[in-house]
Each structure stands twice: as C-alpha cells, then as structure tokens.
View (cartoon, rainbow, N blue to C red):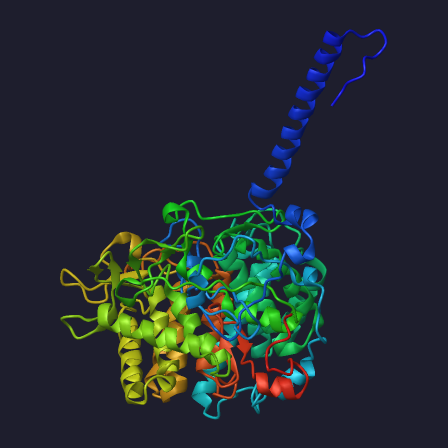
Length: 616
C-alpha cells in the first residue's frame, strides 16, 4: 500500500499518527471482545445470550417424558427438609424429547454446553390449549369419591371430623396472626417469612389449598384462592430453594388446578415454572439448589460438599415438571442422560452439576436422598405405568438398598441404615419413614414373586417407625440401633419433632393397601399426641424433646403440617375413593397430581398423534 503525502504533514509525523490510531483501534477491539466475552461466560447469562444468538443457534429444550427421577429446613444438611424430605428424590430432571420425558437415570449425562434451557414462551410453537374437561374424562373415578370419602362407621367418621377440626383450628390461627406470611409462630402469635422461598409469601396458603378443598372447608378455600389471585407476587428477588418452591408452590398450585379447574392456579404455576428454569443452566443440566427468582442466578448450597447438588432436591422435580409441560404444551427442560457408575448400585447424595460425577459416597433414603427414590416409583405410576425406565431404575435401586442398607436389629426391628463410604451407620431418620408407604405402593409392579416380600418389608419398616413413636407417641428426628438402642434417639440434637408427616404417610398407604385396622389405630394415637403435646392456644407447634416429661415448644407451625400431616390423617380416616390411588399420585409435599393417560388424552385431542405430549 502506498500512502500519499498529505500537505503540511511530514512523513515521520504521519507515521506516528497512524501508529497511534492503530494502537487505539487495537485497544478498542480488545475491550469490545472482553465485554462480549463476559456476557457469555459470567453466571446466568442465558438471557443475554438470547439477545445475540439466533433461534437456530439456541435449540429449545424439552422435558422428559414419563421417565423419572428428589424436607425441609435449609442450612444444615441434616435438617434441610428440601434436600431432606425433599431429599426424597433424585433427579429426574430433564428430558430430551417429549416422549423421552426425563428420567432419573438420564439426569446424570453430561450435555453439550450449547444445550440450554429455554422458556416455553421462547419456543414459540404452542400446541392446542390444554383442555381441563378432557383431563376429567380420563380419570377413572371422581376425585372426591361418591360421597367425599365419608366412612360408614361412626367411630371412623368421628375421628375424621376431629382431623378436620384440627385443620380449621390451624388455618384460623394462621389467618388471624400470620395472614400472607409463610408460616405461623403460634406462641408469639405472629408470622414467619424465612429465607427458603426467595421472597415469595403465603407458603401456608398455597400448601393448604388442596387440603381445604378436600376437607370441604370451602369458605377457607375461597379465602385462599382470593389471596392467590390478588396477592401472590411471583416477581420476588431473593434466594429460593429450588426444591422447596417446586414441591410447595408448584405442587400446590398444580394440585389446586387439577382439583378445581380454576384458571388462576394454572396461570400462576406456569409463570412460576418458567422462573425456575435458569437453575438448569449448568454444564450437565443438573440444576443448582438455590435460585434468585428475579435475576435467574443460581448457585449451590454453601454447606453442600464441593458445590454439589443434592440428590433428593434435583431428583424431586420430575412429577411437577411433567405436568408443567402438559399444561403449557411446550418444552421446559432438556434431558441430559448419563451413565454414571454407582457404588454398589446405590445413589450417593451429592452430585456435581458441573462434572456430573458423584462428590461423596454418602447414601441415605432419609434426609438428602429420600424423595429421589420416591419420585422414581411415582414417575412410573404417574405415567400410567408406561415409563419403563423409571420402573427399572426404582426396582434396581430397591435391590441395592435391600442388599446394602436394610438391617434387622437385635430386637427384631427392620430398619434402613445409612451408608458412608462403605461403612454402615445404624441410624434411621424420621424422613426415611416415608419408605414404608413407598415400598408398599411399589409392591404390585416388580417381579411377581417379590410382591408379598415387598408388602412384608413395607409393613416391617412402618412398624419400626411406629415403635420410634414413644413414649409421647410422637417420634424423634432420628433414631438409632446401636449400643443397645432400639429405634431410640440417643443424641439430644435428634429428639425434636417438627410436626413431620412421614410416619403418618406410611400409615395411610398401608391402610389403603391392606385395610389392617392397626394403621388407623396408630394414626389415632398420633392425633391424640398432637392434641396433647403440640396444640397450643394459637395453633400447633413442634416440640424440642419427644422424651421430656415437660413439653418445650419450638414456636413454629410448619406449612407441611397443613399440607401433609393433616391431609394424610384425613385420608387415613376416609374411604379409599377419596383421591383414589389409581388416579392420583402425591408429590413429596402430599399434593395430589393426576396420572397422565396419554392414550386417553390423545383420543380426546390433548396430546399429539404419536401419543407424545405436545411439547415441541
């Protein structure tokens, strides 16, 4: 290139000026590159990427299918019910194709970095609107039964009415002293917000919707519905537990919609569901446990080993998100499948959302792991028994649990120990007591020769959990079977009871499966104990020591007491046609979700011609 000499400018001066311009342009180019690079690599840049990437560069993600894979006090892993009860699940997170809907096993596969979770709205290809009337046609029986499940014998009816009175008492005091807050503090008569829900309010309201409706407390139900319509603000800006928001808010709103058909619940749950999607924006598609609902930024719990995700948390999403896909008719997730070696066939409680590898070899069907296993069998049942992968995963997991964790105490009690790097810890948590019911509802669909064995195992575990309920007839947070202990809390820190439902949950399932009257008697023991030890002037409170002669209350009426404990007791004393198990599957917060009968829905136009949910 030849530069012409400019008038009044020497050759050396012109060269210097060009050199300066070149350096300036080089610097500017580097700055622009750095800024755009930051947009793509800083955490939670999905929305920014969407600005610069064309649609064909940002493939939509779809949720799983009928495949599967997850209580609740954040902070300490032993007390985080989300990872804990929540911990009852493992990731079923995500799906790849509509019919492939996600399965727990698939959740572990590493995915390409450009596979991103996108919102249903962005996909831009909505199918026909979901028909609530079509859904009702595909139920085998009326949800509330022929006579709202009213038992014929007077004693059982009287007991059911008592449970209903307890619910009304708990609700009335929540309304009086804590309306709009998340939970009631009954001793101090005020509300509690907490930091589990990222600024969301009204957890007790959302958690109670279906319980109020099922019990026929219609005035209270209408109050709750009106609050949700006028006051449930989803534009919060705080750190939320993905697990807790999913099982309580998403589960509660889904259940309320399916039971009542009220569009406000559908509208709110779809809006909330999309706010949870950025948590899946990880290299593996395995979601992080904490999300800011406003910004979409997500991260792992600070106490979780090496920044890992919790088995029971990321594994307790599938039931709810399959229904979000059904209602939205659009993809919500991308399934990431991975074949990961499991130590002795067991699923450890901590998994890296970055590498997809297990972080620790701590295995438990109690806190941190529980609802993962629960959602495996329930995914199979909710798919109308079509999700064979979930079925295979569940029974494979059961074989490993029996081979490695199920133990018999010197006194003859059957329990499920924990496994820490190959060493058994002869401890069972209250959260693990859900497993009696889980094993019971799974007895029918395993190997035919194993059916009675599974029913017997379910009954033995439920019996052990009942034995832990003494002398107050309320159970400790954890109990042990070593050093002479038989289903007894040997540590002061394990003696508290926070109105948990898991033991009563197993009573309900075992009653439905066997009609053995002892389960109703055990349930009534729990009612009397709750009335004696937990009922206070302004609600119900947990207690700090189930062995103490003088009760010390913890001043908290947990929302799951209204959602789970009282609901399971009410169902225990109702006829089986109230929320029949062949039509409904309960999420880990006891919110009933309907079985998805794809063939029936297809015949009535609620699914695609190929029988897949219309997600794409």
